[in-house]
Length: 307
Ligand SMILES: [Zn+2]
Image (cartoon, rainbow, N blue to C red; front, side, top):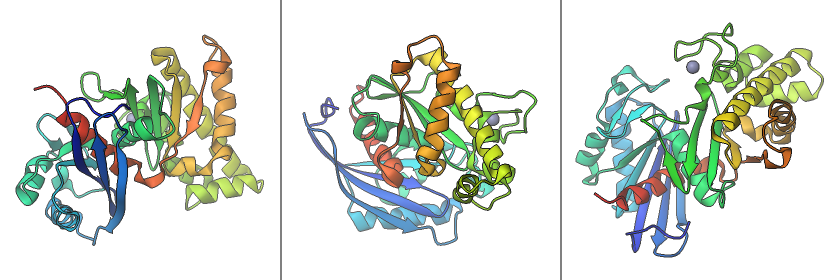
């Protein structure tokens, strides 16, 4: 990324709200230079995950860093970016549904944050500074408890009419298990971390991969089913978007080659409309900081938008 048009110099603070902690990243941006990560920190969420409790934590973090030029906030929810609302936020208290999070943060810290979904923040970060850097069209998949995603075109998040890139809800088996969204057989319902744990009969995805590697038939079957579902979803994405590259991250992707090896092989079996050399699947490279980096980058992009 060649700097940010319209922004000569800025310091942006990105905050990424997770289930048990908030990640923070201070990012510096200067004209004609790539944005640079200046500092990262992790703050625990001290049990109170209500909107009031979380806004209090965010306020403490902003005060700790010093009020920046720009503020970005990533949350694990579907959002209404125009109105600054969280919509569906699984695993958080019900008060988050429809909560005016942007207004609340603005009142608390005196700076209006730019709101983004956490998987979309991951996508912006990995495409700008990580494994998708240098490619025009990048399809990102975040394999965590569920499956998130994002599409970045020429360095900008592409949202379509609002939620483009929700790859976790591509249906790979119409008779399959019920998904949290209400449909059946979404890839998330088969290949999300929680689905893998249940199918493998293991407490964690890491444990499921380890057991499969040790020859456990049930765990191996669960992972085989998950990689098949992901490959089918990625073949559909390829047919629809023809991305230059896929970037795959999230907790499940920590399995590395045990995931990517079979995933690449199955994707190649399913994609016959483009040459194999153009089917690229890269592991994410920014680790757990991707969400906070992406939140900060998104605030810079937002500030550079013409009014
Ligand atoms: Zn779904």
